Image 1: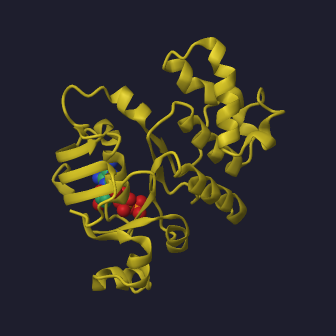
Image 2 (image 1 turned 90 degrees about the horizontal axis):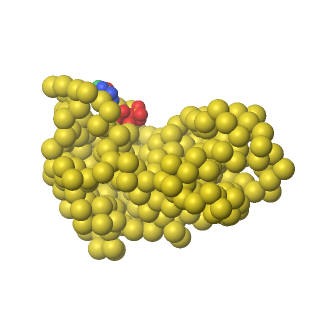
Length: 255
Ligand SMILES: Nc1ncnc2c1ncn2[C@@H]1O[C@H](COP(=O)(O)OP(=O)(O)OP(=O)(O)O)[C@@H](O)[C@H]1O
């Protein structure tokens, strides 16, 4: 278990995961602190995305996947039988590698979630405006709300996807390499947005970019071959790692 004692929104206990006979996660125990950014780093194929997907049960969609252990959010195991997965995914939003706006207007992209969750019609416009402002996108799209979201730039599309996630008021937002398809300026804007978002949300982000992890995260977990090798404050992990394997990875000796 991690040594970080801050209040944790997500507590993972003895998590093991298999794809068929291939074990992709092994004995994962971690407490992810609330209202902060936690980065998941490690070489390709070490289980970062698999772990991220465990936090909102996205792996349920994969037939060969078998999971043991507990992922507790607000002290409730999200793998309990009585958990409503739609409600869970409202609480735990996810932003993917490639921007994936719906093929509809900018407005409708953001209104989609609140409508599904039966927010009264009269409140929708206010939610869309507020979400666009909170995601720092309003100035760029306020005169294009009725245009197709697919006409926005890649970076704007990704911020729209973040806004779409925020519109249903999640508690946690999972980011799976959200900047890997973006140019440096768009990447900067997303990083600034993530830093803003952590005041209100618990954020977990998979990134291959060490500088990005160092810039935006408060905590870092280093994964290797399906295990968490080290977890701690980002400064400590980057400047004074306890494990030689963490140091080797961070200094670019492998991966
Ligand atoms: N849908 C799937 N079906 C079967 N095996 C999978 C599936 N998704 C991932 N795996 C396997 O699980 C292991 C961990 O993969 P995962 O994508 O979680 O790693 P990762 O650290 O996120 O990698 P990357 O950095 O390349 O995205 C790998 O061996 C991978 O081949």
